[in-house]
Image 1 (tube, one colour):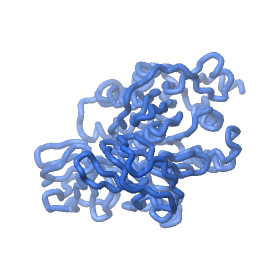
Image 2 (image 1 turned 180 degrees about the vertical axis):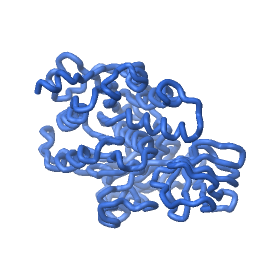
Image 3 (image 1 turned 90 degrees about the vertical axis):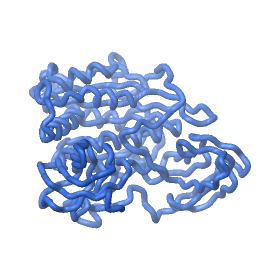
Length: 425
């Protein structure tokens, strides 16, 4: 890193870090904070000073420690090795962290999201001399019950000059591509994508097929389409998490992405314990072989909840681009809104109703708008979908509070849960 990309901490307020001397920094850049190199993101610029949202516990940080700008946005690694893994909000495998540091997650830990050691059997789908464009499938890898389709990254295209079948790591070149400008480019099975930027597609299409959730009352009276959006508001103990977990088990989607955003640790522990034991009725294999879990529980840093939501939807878009129907469960979007309220208050921004920031509506809309059924990039006009099911936890079960009301603007299906009905069970 050049010296111009390094600054010095001047103020610390919870997860908010203020640093000076950060010339050339950009909003959205990922930074490394302090001697422990904690992961953070620049959320504001004030001259040469920057405001950083730190995604790890800031206990023990001191003014004067360095903040280093990496020059790139927070990104997801996408490729074989995602299925069946339990990640935190920064796409670090929690099983790997357990083996390295024990039950209590250490700070500043760097773990590649995709294993650099495991080899995958790559089967080519194109031949040397064929022309390809962005989004074209060049080969496949069998990952559990899922055929993982390796695509030409966005922005690339040209003529395949070399491709071969064999056992490869995700960082090994599996094909070579000669671009239109004559440049030779090596293609691997892994690609990266900034989590706040929606992945591109050709066009959105009309929603015509229902997502069969496996819950008869929902499928009969309150159906949701594949590519649609649904909100599940309800007070404490009304069954939001139970309903989402049941849908995750029985929905007829190809891929399940379950994001535990600020939920209680015992609920996530129950999910993590039981999911590996369940058998998928469609394939006869274990349910985890088509599931990705992002566990960001309530005792983890509040600011990391935002990262977990965007990480989940980016992984969902990646599988959608392969032509799969994906169901994304976010439990709970209210905890994400509380994280935005926390950092907004520390920045001294003007609050609106109940202390939430004025941009809560924009962020909520941006999240739900990433759902939909689309024609993906590539010449074969694959169709894929993302269905987003978001739990909302209104305090005291009050549906007039801002998060519930804003969510109602952008969703198509409303599954309200009631205390009295829950108490009758």
